[in-house]
Image (cartoon, rainbow, N blue to C red; front, side, top):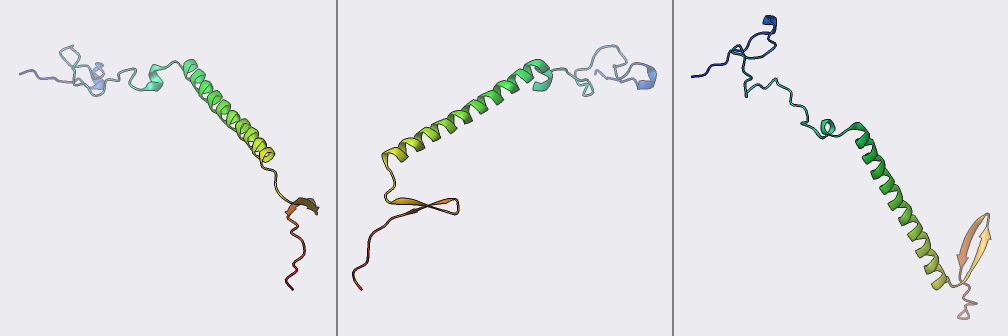
Length: 103
């Protein structure tokens, strides 16, 4: 039976097994590259972040332009009936139907 005896920090071995071999069950050993942040270069992460932000800004700008063009086309194709009256700086739409002759 193989028995691992870990030395203490005071012995100067800093957690290395006493027999000199590295234990596969060493939970204190830190493996580099476990997380995405450790695997990707910081400059590459900034570039990726800027690319994502640029894509979102371009998408939203495209949607704003599309909405403005579509609204203009609809207003031109379907003009409102009636007239507009400006009252205290606000435009009010009204439809003049004439005089009610029932009374």
